[in-house]
Image (cartoon, rainbow over all chains, first blue to last red; front, top):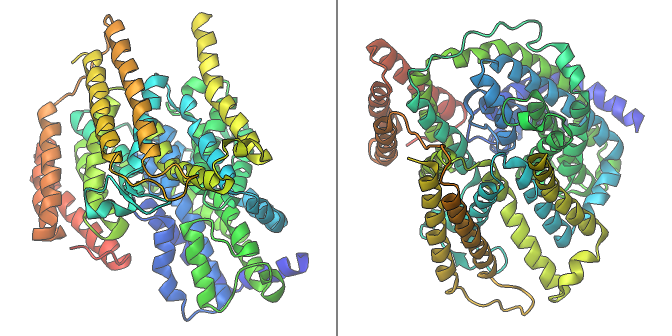
Length: 491
Length: 145
């Protein structure tokens, strides 16, 4: 293995490949920062340029783009409350709060450092565990996926800060919205009153509306409010002592992100939400989460970058695409005449080991690119609110349109923007709704598949160990914050 | 507006939406597989739970009459006008094209947001048009109408 890894490094350190790596990182950084353009769209856009490249170069370019795009998504989440990628939604919870306090530079620095640590740790994990982890992922059947979705939804109790009742209502409305579209089992159209809804409510435009457009309306209410004073950034942008304080989060987030990333279909968004919740659950300052706690950013960014490496385990070892991005990468490999799967490591070892090396070498480059951009990005918040609000509303429209090059997502974005604004005015948290939009389809589809497989036996869910563990964890995750709040109110 | 009124309005809206979902679900076909719960089950169950939670929210709002929390929308006219402008912008894109629609939307929206300096208005509009054309259209290949 080490011989192959060294040969992978040898490939990556060739000047032509290093230029490809840097280009991939810059393009990914840029695509990730544009609301509406997801990493998968970025990969799809770059593939035509790889047709004439040799396979290793093509993979280096794609892998570095994928990694940097996941980081780039956090930039606009922090600065404008407009997540560039769905996985950056959890970054916005605390990142945007820090920006409002005039600490955007600090938030951006935490984001890039956590992303780099996440990418580094998960790349090392990938090198040593790709094959066994991919086999673990194969253990996941419909019951496990259903339990995973339930576990994710159980985070609602810790994500509903003020009122659990309102948080639950927000989540349930999200679950109802996600039933719009074709029925996942029978293909029957459900609540489809427009042709665009056959594929369901598009997630990213909904997210841009709920977060960014609703924020525009808030900004327009307070146009006279002066922008925060220019932040004086020292060193890399945040003190090293801050990172020392949250070393456990910086370490935990990549491990959680990697494991979740390995599970096909779970993906970066679930990874960052679960990691965020875990950081909050173990923190002694739970109440500061969602109000500008740096650990919230580190947890989300560390996990979503680690999930990228995680997604490569089933992709390379089994040829199973765990996400839209992974599916496109498999397509790119096939175009190059390379078949991912168990034989890849013996027949074309240069491909997986070049990917491993590209992930490792790409981390410091990504960190340098990210850190050098902090001071520039931090100036965005100095723009007067009135101009910023209008500009962001335009970017929301552009971002939603680019989602599928049509006007339908723009309408969805506007409707969700107005809805999100009204919900926030009524103190209803929108995060549980995001949770439901991410996990709702996974829950319903896999519940129905499991019931069909078991022939209608509902006890089937309790016969599988991973399912049982996840369901027990879900009950704990749901009830623990409620019990803690109850105890606090009685004290 | 007092927060209780807003909560009651939210509760009523959620109940109406849920009832619509339940009634629409009744038209869905039964599953051909005996074991499968069918396409109507999930929306119906979720709607029923929403109704229960909404009723609870409405009742708790009645019991929470003394709360001083308010729903305040500052510059409500601005917010409503900006929503209308945004809708007009989206409606105008297919007919006028993205760039013309944006050139009309931006100055009015900026003026509404109290930006009166015409240089700032022109610069912001141009910057946005440049971003749309240079980055989205040319670099990323998004075919803007």
